[in-house]
Image (cartoon, rainbow, N blue to C red; front, top):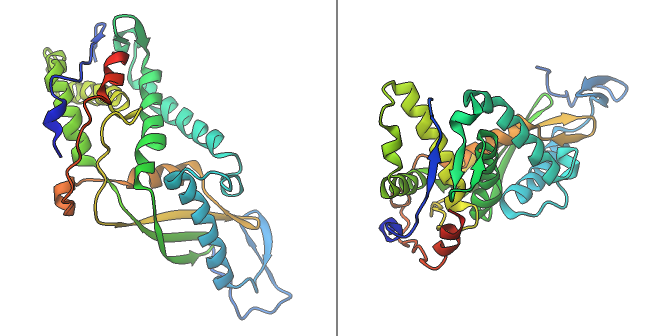
Length: 280
């Protein structure tokens, strides 16, 4: 990847004010009159495991269509709400679990373009929004390989391309070094303080670099195998917020494009960076 092309072009002007940082599977041989409780509803124990595999695969396709292909039409049947509302709740929980790490709030407030203040909650929210809506959909396609049923849980194995996370880290490092953000780490003497501040700044730059597809998103050439966990409740297989987070996080592999055998070099369009320059 020709990352060096963005040096001297992407200008990030930000300042930080005082940063100091179970149940057994259904027995096919059980008599038709017998029942077992599966999930929230009594299901006849004659329910065929093969039928459940078909149902789980259909549910997985709805989830992956929404996450990877941006086709959210059928997601409600597996997420119990529309995709945008489901994602909103996931992000709210993500922010709530982490925002207390960045207190007092004023010490972690970023000032963008000398006028726009970004609170820690804004930085965390923008990071997760970008990850879900802008980066992961660049994977574009998937192939379901197999389904395994255990109790009321389904594990769906599928193959897709992945996000080359080493390249993303390299992009963020180049931006930081180019615009002098590394200087903000001076005076941070404790390793945990340096790491915490570094992660926070990366979350901000992550959104800035990828929110409007300004920079090419590094996707592996070869497909990787992933797993999607689903839970059966009543008559449906559904996904909860933890299973959703596990899925999203799994797409970011510790590789770069060169390690995946990708012969194509991603060009960074200088004109596309003008939008980023206007933001900062």
